[in-house]
Amino acid sequence: EVVLTQSPATLTLSPGERATLSCRASQSVGSYLAWYQQKPGQAPRLLIYDVSNRATGIPARFSGSGSGTDFTLTISSLEPEDFAVYYCQQRSNWPPLTFGGGTKVEIK
Amino acid sequence: EVQLLESGGGLVQPGGSLRLACAASGLSFSSTNYAMAWVRQAPGKGLEWVSIITGRTDRTYYADSMTGRLTISRDNSKDTLYLQMSSLRAEDTAIYYCAKCSLTGTTRCNFDSWGQGTLVTVSS
Image (cartoon, rainbow over all chains, first blue to last red; front, side, top):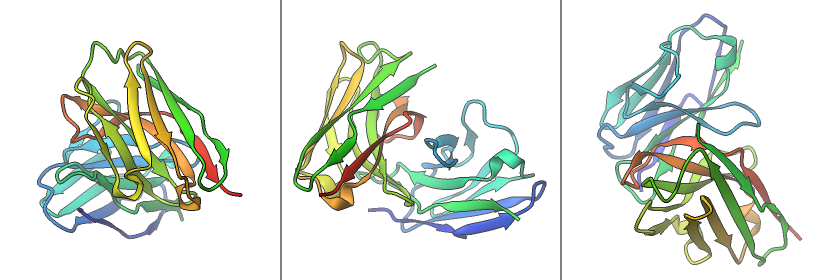
């Protein structure tokens, strides 16, 4: 099973600042890494798939990078609606499909 | 736009059974080849993939934590996904989401549509 480790657990930033979230895989997942955003009381929403492709309707301030075992989600300038929990997910080595433990981006 | 609506959650005693349903609109199960999945989230915890069923061949896969206690199925005539759960334990308490694979013809999925979830509480 591929274990995805996200860091930091919590990121405290102000609107307008840049957010950098990390996801590390226990073995290579190639380019099969996605990111989701989840707000309180809501279902997750797909942001990024296959490392760097934005899903439909996702603003350009969200970008993804990386390959193999180390991946990054960057939010270039935080908007108030971006404060949420972010999860990475791999679809390379399965079953099972696995998710990271999440990074909470909170307002400073 | 695809919409998914789960139902069937509730309070169940340890060892009990429950059947969840997920009705899809804006998506025809019979004319598309998207796999459908269940993902759960325990209170205050992260996401955990539970089960997935292929689009046309009805092959099924389960997380090890629930193997033998789950049956996933789909009714293409009703555009509805199901999850039959048995021998439920306290640690199965979670919100259960149904989710649609973003790609056709595969179970190596990202999920681009999610329901709002249905809460399953296992407690005496």
